[in-house]
Amino acid sequence: MSKVFIVDYNRCNGCRNCQIVCKDEYCEQPWLPYSEAQPLTGQFWMDVKETVRGQVPWVRISYRPTFCNHCKDAPCMAAAAAAGAPEAVYQREDGLVLIDPVAAKGVHGIVEACPLNVVYWNAELELAQKCTGCAHLLDNGWKVPRCVDACPTDALLYVEEDEVDEDRADVLDELAGFHPRVRFYNTPRRFIAGTVFDSALDEVVIGAQVCLLDASGTTVAELATDDMGDFKFDQIEKGVYRVSINNGRKTLPADVTTLDLSLGDIDITSYRSHSMSLP
Image (tube, rainbow, N blue to C red; front, side):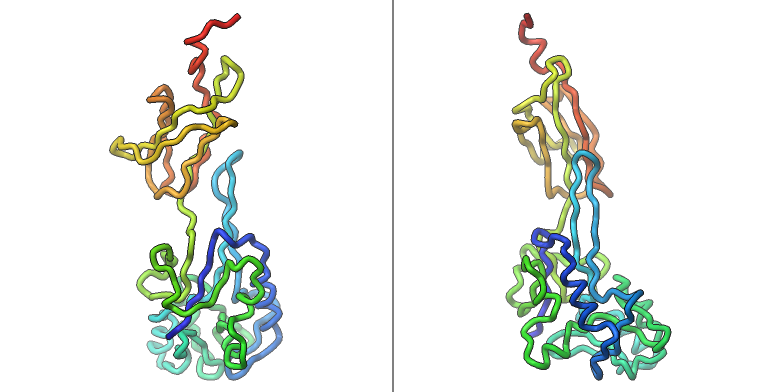
């Protein structure tokens, strides 16, 4: 059975241990016949991507370890074959896709074929290079690659393919159709958040009813503001919505087609002040 990587967004805190140990393992250190040395600069066989989501005051940061996905139908393998060098990129029985440091000399098309841009060109060696899954270590007794071994939160795992919970596993959109061997748990969807307050009373509104309506006007989610007047619709699908507060007393558009959205402070003056006598 082939192996796969699991990346759990909820567990990754951006410590970059995986990125550091990858550099430590490969920079200026060839592991022939698996790989030539990684240059000190210009290449990140493991790279932690940071995405800032939302707007002040509702901001979140997501981290994603990014590396070769060792696709079953790897486009780099197809590119090598098309260039007349089918032996330049090969796939092992455990699923790891490797670039042969001898046969791949001069085959630049391997780099251009990767939709994820995680294959790099070493101009000095005239060689395409990328993550090897630490095949040299696995063949010498290691149970997992160094990046997985160094992860303190288990955000990175290396498991048998049948151990993956396919019901909550995603693959990257860029690699759809290539059957990648990296699966993502808890992939961030969109969020819409805000704070409800009453300027006449000069206080936040606790327990305001907030509904999320889709483009057809159907309620897809509802909740009540918390003790700080805050609400947050989390892990919703991309799309165009409306947020309705207290049965339409206040309605706001909420487009999260491309970005998460902070609606900021939402004034629903007179939510209570019109129904009470003030001294």
